[in-house]
Picture 1 (cartoon, rainbow, N blue to C red):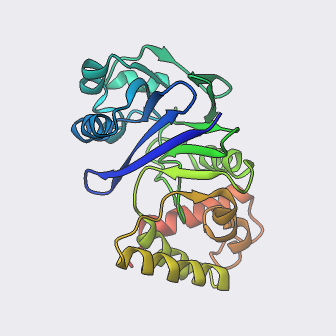
Picture 2: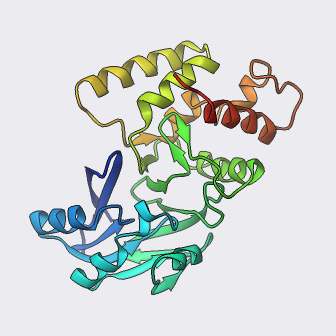
Amino acid sequence: MPVTVHQFPCLQDNYGFLVRDDATGLAACIDTPDAGAILAELQRLGWRLALILNTHWHPDHAGGNAEVQAATGAQVVGPAEVTRIAQLDREVRGGDHVMLGETRFEVIESGGHTLGHIAYYDAADHLAFVGDTLFALGCGRLFEGQPDQMWASLQRLAALPDDTRVYCAHEYTASNARFALSVDDDPTVAARAAEVFAARERGEPTVPTTIGLEKATNPFLRAPKLAARIGAAGQPDYQAFAAVRAAKDVFKG
């Protein structure tokens, strides 16, 4: 059943996402980066919030849970780690599913940025909300997980259909593009970087992206192909990924 996704900027570089099941009119917010902005958008749209779907526990993703729930009565759903800062009504993990009216979200394990990070995938509508695991031309820092865990999580997302729209939680793409150009000389990467820079100059968002586009241009998903260039030739794929991640962590461009 079709859904409508409403995306809006908030905080310094976050995106807020509201998704509405068109059959029933029920809505969910993906994380709660800015409670005031979320409530204002709900009022402007006239949408009724039924669910808060958390991807992980960080304050710019779950810090607004209490305020949004108090104002809307929405049920809070997320991984167990969210209870570090907020209450959950329902704990979910990879392999579970969540219904928003007639829309089914599959829960995908995507730990690495945090240990219990999850993503929400709507197969019928070809869209995924991935929090801070996969970014346009990037991926999340490994604050809690290890490279092998994050690589496995990225591979789960990369296995989704190429036309899957990917809603990542931050506008980091211009910075990610500058890094990508430093480690990957593929012409497709250069062409995408030029498009990204032009879009940002016009004040346009670079989110959502697609799985196919990320597989073709994201240096973190392309890490095995970059192994020789980044000094990881002959290493397992996850170690090539680790080398790319380590290079991005110190990149100043």
